[in-house]
Length: 476
Ligand code: 6PG
Image 1 (cartoon, rainbow, N blue to C red):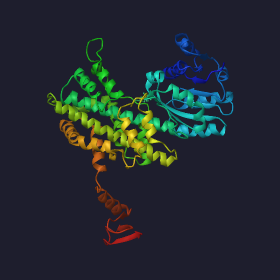
Image 2 (cartoon, helix red, strand yellow):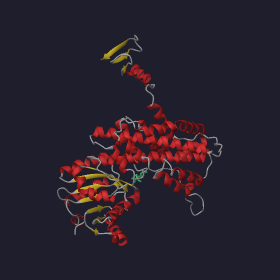
Image 3 (spheres, rainbow, N blue to C red):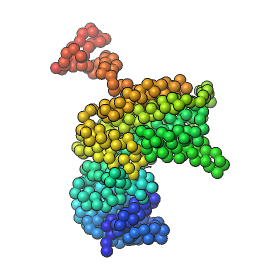
């Protein structure tokens, strides 16, 4: 009997996806460049289901029922192209290569068209949920042609996490849209985590709380509207003690690494002209954190008066919670705007309510909150910005005083809160019908004759600022 699907690349994510499919009753052909990994998988987990291990690519491909769905789980970048080239000679018309890694969406666009020309099919599928998600049920974001998706739908919808009887997997759109959506998911993940670390910093530095106490606060928050996977694991990470009996987190080096998806999200936002401030600040905060030696040097030369720690009152704790919640709303509003603009620009017809739906389970940003986003977009998402939808509008209005107070406290204490404060700045900029860019336009026109529009009459104008001071109309 032939396998229902193939998985190529058996590092943790690939191996767990293969086991996931096998456990759900599918026959799974497995292949890894180094055969030892394949042997290991079979010897440890072979009894979990119907595996077809192969040591040669040709045997691997031959073991799968046509048209063959083959998930490749290799490092993003060149390895994906290499594996595709290795597979091509063995494939038949209509076979489907599914890239389940964190590939850059423009690479996926290219591969989609390249394989289409070769009469093969390509699906760029975002897979979120880490190791555990891959095994127990991830959130899956497949992009490609709808008919290619229809072929794999019965398999991937079973492999995905399920929430309220709905799979956390749906057809996203054509070309690299699945990887684009996963990229923005990761960008939001960056912002979510940055907001959490800023709240942690305030508790630790301004209020002098220890890791255990902060852990308890996050555990409490996880019971309310902030309920989410990331808040839950924050409580767990903060509660962990190492073999010395001290909080592990206090011994972890404060340098954040990154593999690229957050940076790509910010780059794409710049290209699309989206004010994606929260995610971008989160990327920059990681970059600054990575300069550890430079920070140590600067701390000596630019000493900072220690913050006089005082115990937080319940109201102080609540204020930080509200600031976090409001900032989180802004981060999601910005991320969803990026999805909406990209969809229009690239002709992908993304269904924003369905994205919120498949992010409710399996993935890293899974949260109760996503139900609200889903409802807002299901109801038509009439407002131009998620922040203006009833639930979110009420929430930010309610949080606003606390949000200002917390950002003010951070600034006064010399504690950087780039995600909290940039979210508030975005909010303040968004809700102003008239901002200060009139002056900016005047400056541009002064030095570069870039022209400006007027409030009181139509057309484009230029003033000969440094000559005779006359204003001329340059277009109607
Ligand atoms: C997920 C995660 C996953 C991975 C990130 C980490 O959705 O399961 O986002 O894809 O953990 O890519 O990214 P950084 O290494 O850039 O933090």
